[in-house]
Length: 134
Image 1 (tube, rainbow, N blue to C red):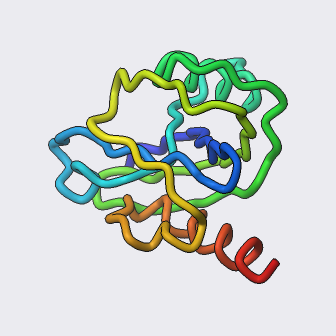
Image 2 (image 1 turned 45 degrees about the vertical axis):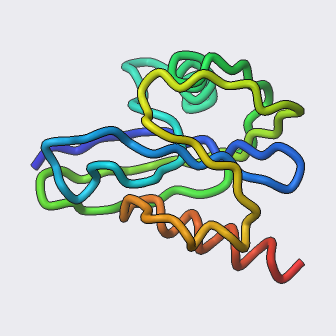
């Protein structure tokens, strides 16, 4: 089974989090689902450098000083994913979608309103558990 090591950005502007929707995929279980933006870690690349590079590529957004949040291991039917998430604070919402079909900026207590990719759900749950309680 293929194993994929990726990074994901929890991009926060004020009280809102960026949620992006994947395009159509041959894997129906992730097709057109919401996720935190990010991507594969390249050979000899640090996780911090990977998240900075991926967000620049996918959103044309410069981020600085990502803060580690958590790691999720998830088994999809066709591959296994290990996703390292980072909180990235920004001060504007000027992004350009290059790989996704939609974006939404939501407050943490609104994140459950979206149809998330399964690997991203534990991140949503941890965000809500840690931040909604204050």
